[in-house]
Image 1: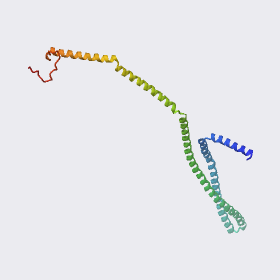
Image 2 (image 1 turned 90 degrees about the vertical axis):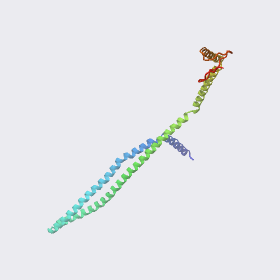
Image 3 (image 1 turned 180 degrees about the vertical axis):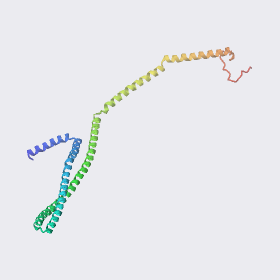
Image 4 (image 1 turned 30 degrees about the vertical axis):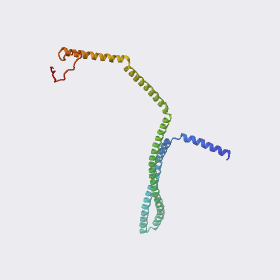
Length: 244
């Protein structure tokens, strides 16, 4: 392989990659749609010219047909009047008019066919443009979706789940330590000597209150005197004390 061939191949690969990287499918498709729409006025103008030629040839054909009829009438009138010289002149004009008419008819038939083909081509182009426009819009939507997916992929690639997971683990450890410390302090408070003393004092206070209550009942005669000094149980409701 020659040096120049290798250089051309390298240049094509280099610039081809640059062009491909800078091409935006959405912009290219939108420009393509605009180009197709911009060609519509020129296409309509061409079709109008073809149809105008058809109409012009049609009018010319009608004029020549009328001229042929008129010359034929004049020839017959000249012959009746015995004016062969005038009839001969009209015959010459008629011959030329008939030639022109045949040529015009032939051209008119071709122009009719050309008009039909031009209209059909214009209609096919409009249909093709509508189809291409719909396809381009679908491709543009797919391109936008692809861009969104690329952005999402880049965002997910740059998102470091490990860092946040470490933060969650660190905060969980701190909360667990605080909860454990609070639970230990609560447990220590319930088992302390001061707390036990408070419970004993509360129990003693309850005993004193019960003794005072019993003493009130004895003083009011609700309880018999106990020689042993121990209080007797109160009779049940509805029962009377029996004398021995």
